[in-house]
Amino acid sequence: MSTLGHIPNVNATIKHSQNYTDYKSLIYLMYNPDFIIDVDSYWQHQTNEHFSNLSGTVNTLTPFKGLEKGILVTKIFYTEDKHLRGVAEIDLDHKKMLVAMEGKFRKLMDSMFIANISTTEEKYQCQFKISKKDRHFVALITYPDGNLGTEVLFALNDLIDFDVKIFLATPIEFLQKVLIVAKLHTGKADFRIGWNSLLLGFSGIAHYVNIIDFQYTYKIYTPIKDFEENGLVAKLIFKKGLDFETSLQLSRYKVNVS
Picture 1 (tube, rainbow, N blue to C red):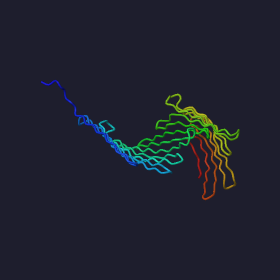
Picture 2: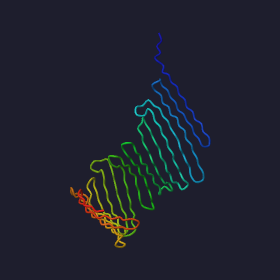
Picture 3: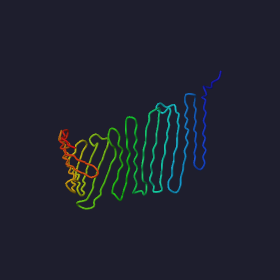
Picture 4: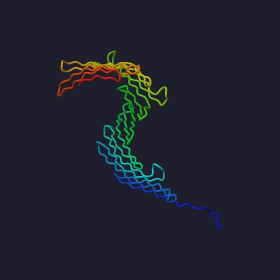
């Protein structure tokens, strides 16, 4: 009588081929008929002195629930001035996802990257920016239930021309959002401080050229219930068309003529 237990059937295949522009890969692993992992990818890379273009397709097959069948189709452009644009479509067991991205990577202290991720039900955004010239730093993730990350802007030209912003978002309940804004430019002002859902401050726009080209917009933010956002708008701009609005808003109540 044999003492050997059942010996599983294992089959593994790895293939790869490439030339100057095309790359093909195949990974196949079978551990019993019910456990198969199959990854088949094809990539094409085109480049010249002005840009690089990478496009590809990846098909996957796994035994894992939710990842049983997947398809990735993507295309990425990278230009000579270090500007990146890309898009990717992902289908995992008929659940579709679209990823659009854009970035600039000129220098370490002058770079940015934004990725927008959309599904049939939800949207996400990832932002990263660091600019020594603008004195601006962003590392922020936006998801359906809130934000996670920070933004710091400190552009101070003089006492009547500055733009300062500090924003912090965390998953901690008592510190979900902290906001400090101090902005002053010709005809524009914005001063606000916020803690979670509480917001206090004011903002305004004052623009006047003549009787048919003016805008006055003022908003006051308070933590008082039913008076969180209050505003007054008086605008008339007649150039290629007519843009006219007068309105008064007391939080949930608004009277408008436009």
